[in-house]
Image (tube, rainbow, N blue to C red; front, top):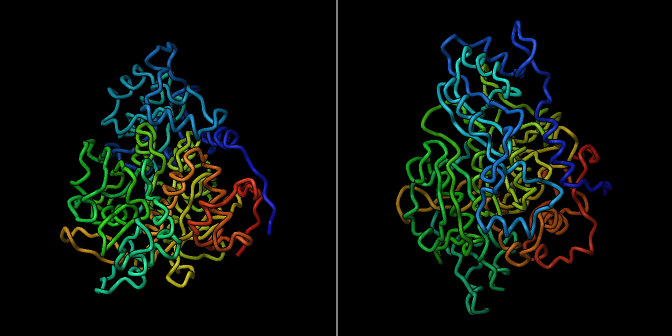
Length: 507
């Protein structure tokens, strides 16, 4: 077993903030001072046409000269403040990040661009759509620090298989064992592999835990699997409305049902008793690449609602030129905007669970997707029913040498609700399905241990999974054991959180 060092979350956040400008800046011709352009943006402007719209990040130098009571007040719910008090590390974040972006800055940017997309407090930035001429006008503003492209991705789709009617293999054995006995139907295997039914028997269901789920849309919330679900809030970050039913291809319906669906005899999710907030962050209406600012905006929104867990089944791969995209070298826990946003959520006590990706194995590099590369992100690998790694499941290590993924659950032929009818089910494969299973277990863990920090959750999951003694870059610490994670005495094991660069590449 390779010994690793513990690194404080405060240091990680500081390093991420410092790395925001990691790529050498480019000055516009004739520009002696003012905002810099990243090489990515400079290249995009050179390759584009004069009237082409570019998705651009506008990063500000500060939060404005005048700090008012309104700008310093925390834009979060009472629930979020309570979660921060229980789980956040005071040294890992400060109130400055929560201050509103200076409205005067945003207003001056807005009149110079084609469209404002999102304004984020944590990043102190606004994402916009702008032409090359408009970008040059932004670069001349004294309060603008730098400009960068909004990176884009191409979604990796998982295969779908038909579910054949079958009796629950062992579900009948649960009846009569206790007052919490449930009939899991053919969803029993995906839960029994990670020992969720035993926690349900103890009365754990995620009650009192708020789970945020990011996906493509949820057009079939009328499905029978959601009839008892508590949905607290919803927001479509593509269209800017509080209705998540208008888009989606069935992906969001599937992942939500796997995490928290409840239809005895058919499908039961690990966290069927949890409450949910739903966010649409991926646009499937066209073949254009998906953009990272939606994810970052959703993370800030979910945290402000008081989410305890974020479940994100959005795995992306490199997009074709000329669209700017991240590569395996950027999967270092500090570069991708989504990863930076995930780390800032973690600093405030939110456990972020993200699909590792469906890029499979590569002998010379990682196949991870952001934000699964985050140091404090639980990256979800996938296995089949025998516990063997699914061949599509992405592998590590991260670009800075850390072990990824973290843990794994079933990702092959996972029973899920579909959009076909209100009582239809199918089997889907991919780390998109193992992710909500793992997030559901995290909800059970937090119900059992409400004061657990993100570090505690990572420790409990890693220290009790199937290959905790010999983690590798294929399945990380292995297949989850939900019962062992809940029962673990934290003081009895060494902290497994790795220092960047301390892990040795192990396959």
